[in-house]
Image 1: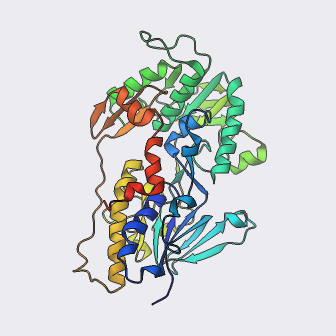
Image 2 (image 1 turned 45 degrees about the horizontal axis):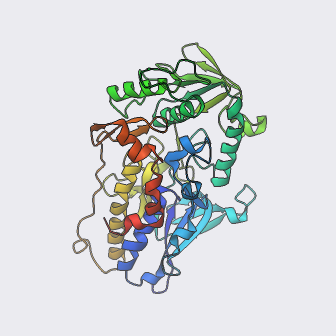
Image 3 (image 1 turned 90 degrees about the vertical axis):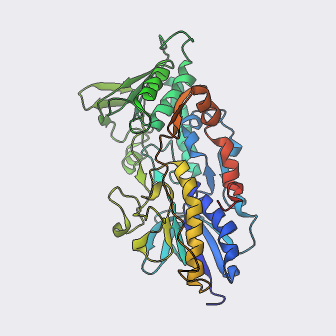
Length: 430
């Protein structure tokens, strides 16, 4: 196969995909024979990568987080590697044929719409890191950075006139966006007050459970979080779900809403399962996510819609040799950034092992054992509530509000992303 192009395709240009590409370029390709015949091909719908955890604050105003670090050009981060070893394609994967080992994608360079001619690339190895999308276009690319910025602009135009906001979802995203909006619009109650007396904007969080942050943090921390929300004018309604909204599709960018008009940030009647009705100037659905696997055969998916992944090796065993999945889209671990960072060295090591065996340089014995991924299932979650407070736990230990602010709340992890996007995070093989 001398001289034959061997594509290592990486689908997804966020935490998982960019980290995988850097690690493979640094620690896998240099060990391969005829390494000049291998090329890492990163395919992403967006030309930029963003600090996605920061969306609850960034969506309010460009002034709240450094935009030059929040959005970063992907291709530029890979100019450091030898010519020919890396290729970036701005496009969206539309079909994975794991039997013929090809990926079909719509290229943004050709418009990326329904009328654009699909393109196809063959792969020698494949890493699926396409992540997940949120119901609200305020928290994820839909499909790219231009669409996200457009959604933020529409939201910001409606925000000054809003006097009531309903947030559906009591998980970290719902709590964080309610806290950010509460402090930005209402300020914070005095030190000796447990709640804000007369908030300018009534903000309500609706959660189906008996408390917020279910399955994320312990009861005492959830109770503390609810107290911090009250201090920025946020009320929590528990034990009920949103049954319906009018207009239908409010708070989203679904195909129906595009036909009916812009309802991303519009007056909404929110009907709850308990029969209660809330009137909102802005409705924000911050519950649930859709895994970006629409291009993958059903036979490769787990029951929850994620890629059915070997939790130890990160291989997608049903897809044939040298196919892997990492990040939110993988069933190997619960969706979390720290899980992704733990998966990348395992992926790179096992890919290197597989490639060396396939090249005949090593066999199953001399290559050693697979590297094994072990998910960190300890209570680890930091939830900022406004710009100076928060609740959280790290490795099972509750941490004070100041720690939450220091590590995450001051800029929503923006201080960590420079090394991730540039690949400096992966200088050592790990």
